[in-house]
Length: 419
View 1 (tube, one colour):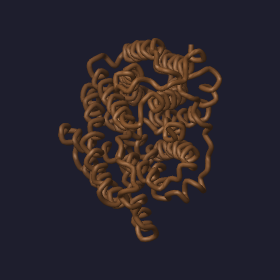
View 2 (cartoon, helix red, strand yellow; view 1 turned 135 degrees about the vertical axis):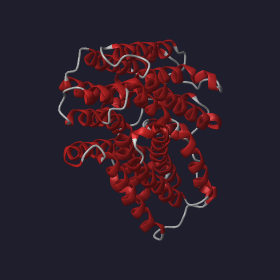
View 3 (cartoon, one colour; view 1 turned 45 degrees about the vertical axis):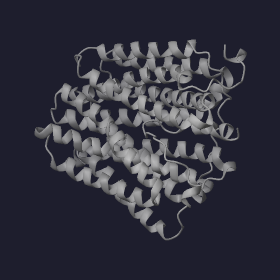
């Protein structure tokens, strides 16, 4: 049991964390399937027009709740038991969806999933941080993010191979979630300390880096809008189930092909300049998404892969910029504030898009993403002259991060950095 395990470091090997990575990859497959299945079915059903967007908003709101409850839950029962509880909530949410198309119940189920999802991230990332040694922790986290994002894409692809009618998709999600419990339930990894309290200090986060704080806000709204509303947009344009699944699958690989080169560039030049360039990519992808029709689906997939990859890049570079300027004593409240800021923006922006879509049409989410990108680029440009760049030798190296997996594990990095 958690309470009986010795509190010592695990062996210095990437294989030692395989149980956590495998578990979260299985979770991601189920999540990727539901991210495609729920909006597709709701859009094609007789549910009111606001319901698909409300389901997207509910995930983010649930994530905000998860930020608050995860720490106390872990301190009360330990990481392994809390992980099993959060997996049970994912299974319960999928079970609700398997009962048939009941719009309000589905929105509540997605909210429940959001709370469980952020709890999963806090547990898995904190465990990875504790189990990995300083010299390979970055590789461990990159492997975790990569495996999770590929799992999301695999789940979306799998959705295209099964019938959308009936409840096979949520049942498969339940299967993968159940499988995910086993590796963590059998792991011999030592239990990490409980994560720090989620303490909100917006003035401190603003003093540390206005560009990073606003960037995480922007990334929360951008990621949830682009990832959540794209399948709704495609389904509303009578795109087939297989093509929607393929679109969601291809989008995940934008993370690799856009974020890596932009992140490497941000290690060489002022990260703020790279953030402005990334915003320009988002705007360009938005114009392309408005111009390319679904008749040219392959080109549109590439456009949305660029769109999604640029959005993820905003999040990762903003986090790196925050870490460049952070005082070690402020790291835990900074991480807490950034996590809650991400979840808050990820709730508010989709909610506004949901409210405006009936009046402005299915393209609303694209306009919203472009607007957020332009406003953020202007803000960063205005900040360029107010503060000098952090000297390159004092900057931390860029690490792969996904806005779909908010940096929850940072809540305990104060402990790992002091080693």
